[in-house]
Image 1 (cartoon, rainbow, N blue to C red):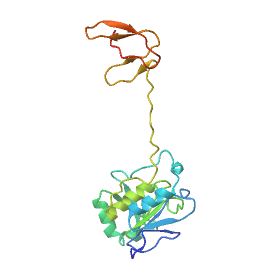
Image 2 (image 1 turned 60 degrees about the vertical axis):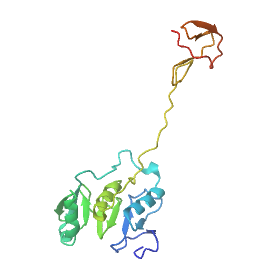
Image 3 (image 1 turned 135 degrees about the vertical axis):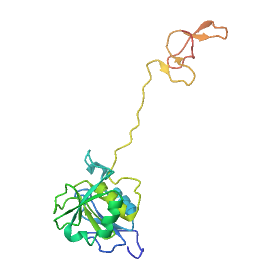
Image 4 (image 1 turned 180 degrees about the vertical axis):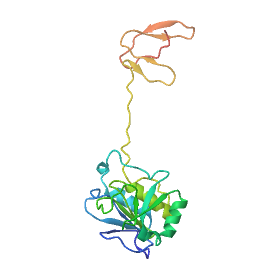
Length: 209
């Protein structure tokens, strides 16, 4: 991956190379445990999307980190990550230092939770609550400088709505058409109307009121 020989790789252990990203989704989203290693977050996100069942996401899944995401960073990692922390602060992220061994964790995440997602980028490991995968991707994108166009979680299925027209009428861009089976009237140029037999569903257009 670091040499640019391949675009993607599947692994069960996050690599330590800073030039690649590693995306481990929420447990259960993939058929088998593992992670995707890629050169960019966008490539890794596309790979995960292709391997994830759209129906596996809950209805209330978060599709973005929000305007003011909040992170906690441990005391023991704060100095080592000071450059990354500085970039996140400039980007508007609220970073709180806590006494925990975890690298970077969104507010509310319990340390040691293993079923949540994990995203590693530029040597920084982000951990999150289950199904907060997109939150971590957005935070990691602040470090890589990427703009992720499409969210990883499935956003739903496009619906096509069919509108039924009233019985006996056909849509027309100019004026409604009379399609009754009884005798219809055809309007003449001078305003008079003459009767004309109309077949059901295919009658002449009529402006007579």
